[in-house]
Length: 120
Image (cartoon, rainbow, N blue to C red; front, side, top):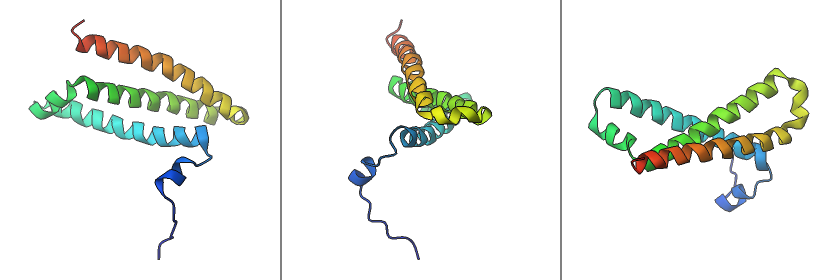
């Protein structure tokens, strides 16, 4: 018999996990985006036209880049905190640093994708 948890979307969004919970969820979504990226890339190399058309869409590229970069930076933060356990007490600072680095790198990546899509 399963648990009956009466939790709707609004209640889930009000969850007080805040930064750590958000990074947990985005890390999982980013991993899924990387799986989709590698699948599309392999299908493009195999000559599948649908995958090539989808992969060359600027919006798809931006979504994959945004989620992939977050996955990589969050994974780096997790690795650093695992290698240096004394830093775990500063995990909120580490998350704030992660977001600052992410915004800078992601902003540049989006600029590059949009410039490339515009023919520049």
